[in-house]
Image (cartoon, rainbow, N blue to C red):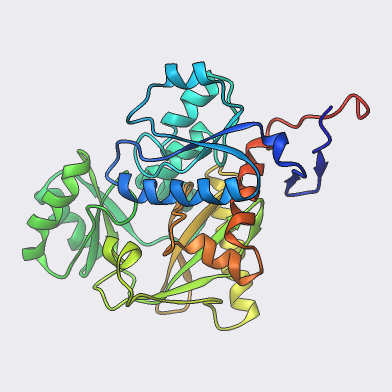
Length: 328
């Protein structure tokens, strides 16, 4: 009988690797972030195998969910970024197959992926977030920037890794920025540009990890700065004192919970000129590459990459707690 159920307030602690069963690490996919997902997934598989977990790659771009069901996986470690992986689609497919999975559920994943819906929920809960508007074309964006001002950020509503994102300094920049963002959907987000420090807070099993301050020579923390550049600097802890650290951590957990997220994730901030943290977004399946922020934050408090991957896999038990007959 299973003996893995030692539970504390924020974590389901799994002792034996065999208790995870046969694990599918879902990677790749069909989104614009496929290459990053492949990198994340391969790193996760290597880590899980090193801990004795029966882990196998599964790329839904190459194999169907019908085939997935035939294999008979016991649970899934989701390393899919972007559409069809981070937006509730794969989560819904796994629930139909009664397969437990890591991280947030269907509704929370879909909500967090939609930047407009997320920001409306932040506003309703008095969680600070930069001013914003939505646009379908150049004319809409022009009106929005009149209200918000320049510089502004133009980004797709439902993309990650800064895909399709631009910083615009005047009206002449708008056309290219709108065209770029509209490649990924019918509407785009026009957002106030906050030029202060960029801070990120990772969340693992209900607890905030140390903050990271991101310093990039790029115009903003874009795709290249995130995944390719060796010139991006990361400072952990990223805040100046314990009081400030707690303020960021409390807002991050509040934002995470407001969207209904669970398990693990990352909350991204910009710091306003008055020092107030401004929530940009919540990421429900952050990157797990050599340049990724969650592993950096975990490492700062002594959680190695292999242990981090194990603990994230533990989140697949969050709504499915098994007990032995002796506990019944």
